[in-house]
Image 1 (cartoon, rainbow, N blue to C red):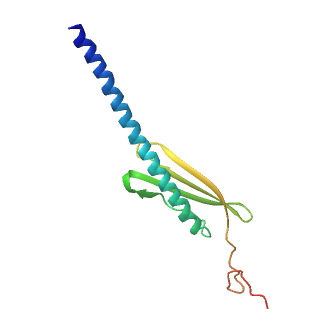
Image 2 (image 1 turned 30 degrees about the vertical axis):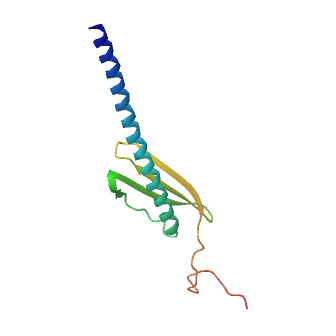
Image 3 (image 1 turned 180 degrees about the horizontal axis):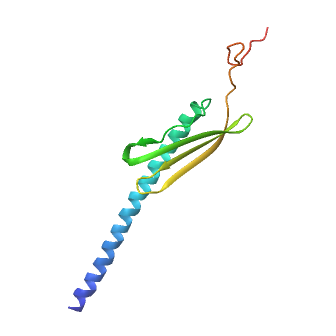
Length: 117
């Protein structure tokens, strides 16, 4: 009878350990997905950089949400911030300073590049 009680206690502890490891693996998978979504959002924001207009929150697969904020930092630099909200209530955020592209010249209609004679 004593051996049965000890065996059941060991089995209960082992099951709790398995459950905790399963939860940890699921959370790390969510974190990896959030990093992937943030990297994709950062690359897209770099391509759309001349337009620093606020963008609505994006709904992503798996109940993730992504917010991209771009603002002028200093002359020639912009601060891009991408925040990914996880389904369980966590968040992952990445921010980078990037060089702003040269603005178009409204007088000539060109993009600022000139040919030398």
